[in-house]
Length: 283
Ligand SMILES: [Zn+2]
Image 1 (cartoon, helix red, strand yellow):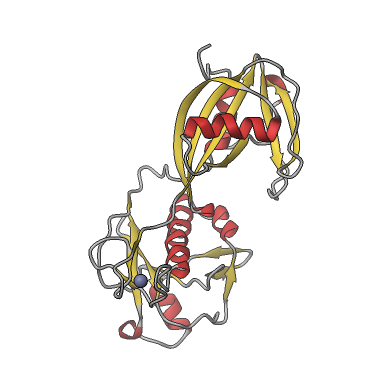
Image 2 (cartoon, protein in one colour):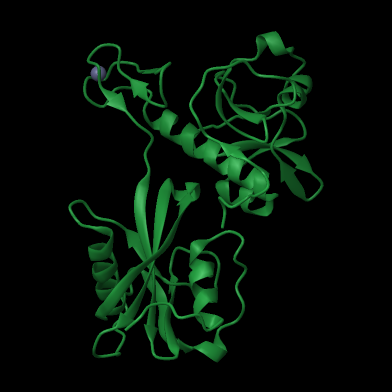
């Protein structure tokens, strides 16, 4: 999964420190991130590379520390410069999917933080311009004291089993045409397990039992934390698909499920666990 980068070490403790030439730099324009073109692919620029492309020196760099992997820090560019020098381009989050595990995790997690900061430049309570806390990862309002922590939206995803078949679906918003699992954001006032029951009923018209926790992963692409579950069909197996959310929903026999790569998403790990015949949940 995306956060599993052993033997590399991801460090997300909050601290304040100065950038070095070979640290990574994230320039975020509110929806896209500046990346360096390398033929047909992209790389996250190092501080020295971006400064060199703009004819500047390290002393002129305005940015703050976000996190580091194996000691290489990721800094967010604080300047108001949202232009792309020659050889660079602003691209969407999906481009990080094409990178090495280290750049993918460091890059998209940095953008998660950058997006949160971007959305909270002004206090939601009093409208005053906010500042970053120097003690913790938080944004504070100097006028009314409002404190805003990073936005992490919980999501549930569930592998629903019906004997030797798995409930698979395709979300209308997903550009990847492959079938995945039922998932959705947790609503206010419900538990993760209640969200599983609700999502399966809403999206597929099915009831489930024996809901079991499988594992979790960060999903910075949607500012989320995803909790994975397994469950079993309870009762009628007739699928009544929610057409506003899904383009397909069906029971797929174990032997008809193709192999899924498990290096990025918990969705694929859940599917592979079923496909390989592991016992997902006890009845
Ligand atoms: Zn305020």
